[in-house]
Amino acid sequence: MKDGIIILLFVFLGVGIVHFFSLKMLDVSVEKKNKIRRVFYYFYGLVYSIAGVLQLYSSSSLELIYLFQTTLGIVFIVLNFLGKLDPKV
Image 1: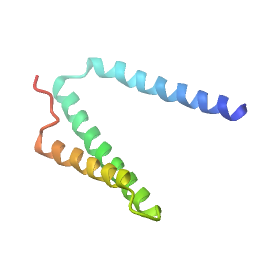
Image 2: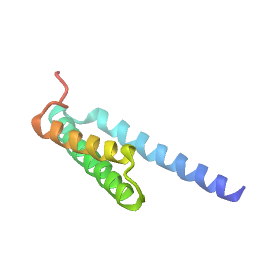
Image 3: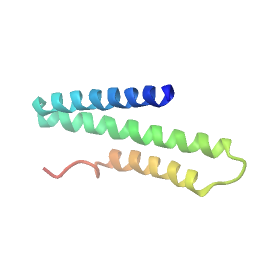
């Protein structure tokens, strides 16, 4: 029971932090938002790829879901580099 309450508090804290930063993003210029979005997608693709590689390495057999996760992370990085993830505003 204590573990569940601790997890719940950490989730609420995480959601509160994300909400705080999303409110702060309303006052930021469009150029800065685009720059932050590009950095986020690079970070997201890198974390997704590393998690897939680590899970693929730790599993005893070739799991297709981990291979797909690694590939999807690399696709995010490449599409971000090519500018395909930028909004058309």
